[in-house]
Length: 431
Image (tube, rainbow, N blue to C red; front, side, top):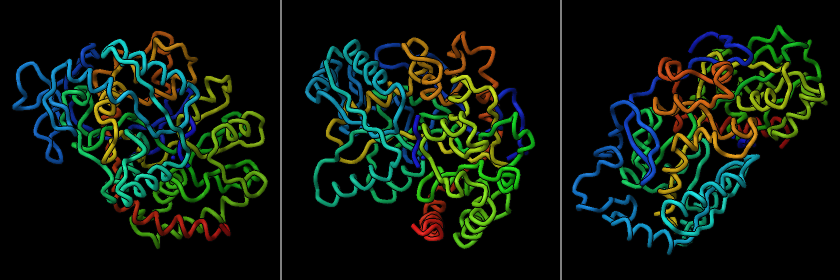
């Protein structure tokens, strides 16, 4: 997956290095209508005005389902008719190696479940801010939004909320899988996480550079010409600066302190960059630089480590930030989405355990790891595939780790600060 220019000491967990993540609440039980999607424990989010968990709406007429956004109680036949009339939807996300298979699987699911032939248009971008620009333009002109679903990092959801671009769709009987999620993965009534353990990591060659232990180690002269880091202006560089701010004792909410972090990065890590100037967040380029031996250390999403591992590079290891700030993907529906019923069906499908763990899809193990980014709740734990049972916890967090160590980000404060220090970062590089 090409992601966007997307509290403890570092621990070692087998071949790849991960850390405990953050505290989230209990989860519920649900199933995709009408196919079963597994069960979990008790509890449901009631945050931000959601009265009950999805699938437990009050006042729904007998024999109907309450469909959020359109705010109607609809029979199964009415839902099928609405899906057939909508005919398709557009989703804005990142790029995946197996995007075509994701599209194929969802279209097959809708056909099997609702009897409709629909078209899923899946847009991939490494710069999700483009989606927000288009949504804001549509709002300004009063026109229909060009997207039905947005599925990108949590900070972009917060930015869209601040611009009043996000619709409320929860609770909805079309999204019963909401109840499978731990409470910490919900921003009811507007957004749900579809990733549980995504963060910016330091990926390095453990054979050549076994001494690397922290992000500040990227300044060591032994790495001269062997380092890549993300360029300014996106959440991947934001994740790097978050990690460095913690190691340097700076407050990410204070843009002036973050400027000091930028200065430290440019002065100390800059001289060690490949070719003296390699700021990159292009997944394919990073993998080529690492596999060829041109780079020995790169800062990118933790999923890059798994891709290296499954592509046969057994020399990779990973350093997580001293404080692990998750930067998970969240899925939400823009205001005036033209296909609101299918939007909810897609969200529910994307959260289903059999989609979070696409074990039956005809894809390789590397692409599998792009779609599977940790446990969203207890119901997902039993879906680890047989081929991964021995090594899964060398690559991912346990459900107890996900629940045990809270590192939260004040996204509103981060976004405000980031607008200042990212611009400063770009100007310091002459951009």
